Every structure is written in structure tokens, then in C-alpha cells.
Amino acid sequence: MTTDYTRTLSMGATAADSSQDAMLTRLQSTRVHLTAQTDIPGVPAALKVLIGNLRRLPIQLSIAPGQAADRLPGRLLDEVLHLAAGIDETRPLRIGSPTGGLHIHLGTQPPTTAAASAVPDGHGVRLRAAGSSFPNLRGAGTGLGAVAAAATLTGEVFKVITGLHADRFRPLSSFDFCPVTLTRNPGDHTQPVTSLLELALIGTGAIGTAIAVILDALAVEGNLTIVDPEHYDDPNLTTYSLGTRADARDKIRKVDLLERELNRNGRWNILPIHGTAQDLINKIDARSAAWPRIVLGAVDSIAARHELQRIQADLTLDGSTGGHAGTTLALHEALPLGPCLRCYYPAQPLDVVSAEEQLHKATGLSLSRIAQGDSLLNSLDLAGLSAHGRQLLARHLGQPICGLSKIIVSIDEGTYRPSAAFVAQQAAVLVIGALIARTTGCTAGPRHTEYDALFGPYDDMTTFRLPQKDCDCQTHSEIIMQVRSLRSQAAPVRAGDHKWQRRKQR
Ligand SMILES: [Zn+2]
Image (tube, rainbow, N blue to C red; front, top):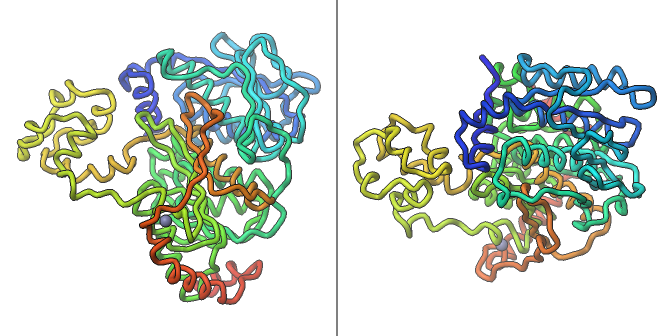
């Protein structure tokens, strides 16, 4: 078995209007070299995320060991070598000087050969292309700033090495961003989350694993319920922020992966639930799980979003990725009495348009061809389609066309649009930025923020949302308040209770 790069290649090929084979050839001959100033707060954490992100691409990767004050600490070097080998042992991280290719830097004083550099500043990120200098940093880089810096810098690498058309991205020459205030002023906000949080993370895919990485790097603590029904598999290795080849081989439960990673530092009191949000709701109402006051949503379908809204937490922060090439990302802040996630994501009227028409719209396959239900999808069918259509249908070659309509719901909701780890990380950065904002005094109305990772955040990307008049949160507000009242009357869960419950279950 070799590491499965299909999803990353598919995303790169779609963004660059190229084929997966051409993208593989291109990336395999691409060299990327890293340097880092690990004495700057947040840079060691950023380096680990950056190396993980770049190792999830089939490129040749090297890192400078550094000299004198900039020498990489031996333990950190061991960690990143181990991390890279866990993702693809056939492509080890090389330690040494650059041999051409693209050079990127973490820190404020890049060598002259570096094309781009980034550094955490408080909870935010500053990035500069060669020739632009950094201002003085305003705050010590936090775990959130570290992941923001790594994800942003990975985005700059992705734009260059995939050979995107000039109109498909915006190179960042001088970029500053704070995911807490959603402004261009990083470093102003460094306030940590200090209170003991009662959190639930629903969904441990690309965004959920990135959220876990940030929670771990932030050094906050609290009770965390983690919910996901799936097992870790080969394609997850190159799109998630956590997990190894061994985890994919063993097909471990995703909730167990997150529990293992977060338990290394022992700050979270974790209750893993191998199931869906409804299973958590059942446990809350049976008083065998705490009612989370804040829910972090990282699920990939509208139905799953509606389900987690029914937890009726004080605050739901939903992260998502999507778009034609899987490079757009969004944050929705939802409240039980509106705007709720149903306001943001109304149910799709699937019965209005026929399944055949939806398949045609999603893939470009002609309606006359779709009408030949018994015949099998062949390579000629794919030849006439856009790169996006080919990407959606390639995996169904040889299958009867009548069966394809069944996949439209998944297509419609984005399941088949792979996102790279750095895009999901930027969505996770917005989610945790909002968590910090909302637990440290931000009183702005519920925000909907959305941007394309290939263009970066922009000034008008945030809108303040009002509830939809005909939504359940408006028409059934009394029932919602009763449910919330009942759940809040359950005995408060103290630190350690989750672990006690787990022992009892065994
Ligand atoms: Zn609503």
C-alpha cells in the first residue's frame, strides 16, 4: 500500500484545470524547502502543522537544520521527522540545505532566498512575500495564530506549485489577519480562553481534526464531547490534519483518534461518542452525557447540520468547505432562537427537480445519456465533461447510469468535493476564532463569514444574519425554550465526570 493522494490531486487538478496524472507528475518533481525561527512563540507549533500539510502533497520536502540561535531543537526535529514518516514513509523529510525549488520561511527574518514567510501574531497571522518586511509583532503567537500561519503559508505554496491560472487566485504580498476580530489587525487580540468550557465537537473529518489540533495547541481546557460515526480510512490521510498510515490501516474510530491526540497533553476531559449528534442528544436527555453549551459543527451535509442544531446549545459554530474546487470555506454562528443552522441551510426541495435533472446539473452528463439507465458509464461519457464533472463521476465508471442519480444528494451537499487540509484548517481557524470571540466578550450579532482560500479573507466577507421568519426556530420557539430549560436542569457535570461515566459503561 502507498499513501493515497487521490483527493489532494483531485483538488489540485480541479483548481488548475488539469488532470490528476499531470498534477501527480508535476508535484512529484516539485521541491519545497523550509526554514524556521523556532525561538518565536507559536513558530514550533506552526512548523509541525506546516510540515504535516506539505507532506500531504506528493512533493520533495526538505528543512534546514539551522545554525546557532536558529538551530532547530533536536526534539522538534525528531517530532517533525516522525510526523512526516507517519504520513508517507516513502517520502521522508530531508534535512539539509535547499537544492533549488520553492523556499518558504516561518519567522520575521527570512533568508533572501525565501519566496514567502509567515508568523503567528497573537491569535492571528502575518504573511509577507519576498521583498516586504514585517512590522514588530504585537502579541505572542498562540496555538490559533500558529495554525492560521501554517494554513495561510501552505495556501501560498499550493498556488505556486499547482500552476493555477492567474485569474484563479490572488497572490498575497502583504497579508495580516485576525480570526477572532475578523480584521487586518492580528496581535491586538491575545486573550486566552480561561473558563472551563463545556464543548461538543460534532464531526471529526477534515475540519474536525483541524479544530482538535487548534484546541490542543491553544492550551485551553474543559469538557469535550467528540461525536463521529466513522472510521479513519486511507483517503483521509492526505486531507485531514491528524492520523497516520497505521491509523488508516487499522481503520480506527475517528473519535478514538482525536481522544488519543488530545490526551497527550491531558488538558481535556473527553467523552467520545461513536455515533451522530442524535446519539449525543439521546444521551443528554437520558442524563448520561452533559449538555454542551457550545457546539462546534464540522459535518458535511445539510441533514447533519439540522441534527446538531437540535442539541439546542447556547451557541453553535459551524465550519464548512465547498465550492467548485473545494477551496471556499465558511463560518456560521447560530443561536437556538435564530438564526439557527436551519436558517442558514434550509432543507433542499429535492422533489421539485427530478433526480435526473440534478445529476445533469451537477455533472454535465447529458439528459439523453442519463435516460439510458441500463447502460454502463464509460470513459467516452467522461471525455465530454468539465474537469469538475469528470472528478465527480470518475469513481463510478462501469456502473449502471440509473444508479448514478442516487449519488446526487451527496454531490449536492458537497461530499464528493475534496478539500485540502489547509483549506479545512482555515475553516477551523474561523470556528475557533469565533469561539474565542464569543467567550471573551464579543457581542456582535451572529456572523456569517465566507471566503475562497485561493484569494484570502477580504473586508466584506462577513454579514450579520437575522432569523428566517418561517424557520422552526421562529415558529417553534416555545418548544425550543422548554427543551433548553429541561436540559439545563440536569445535574451539572463536574470535571472528571466523563471519565467516570466511561468506566461505568465498561
Ligand atoms: Zn432558524
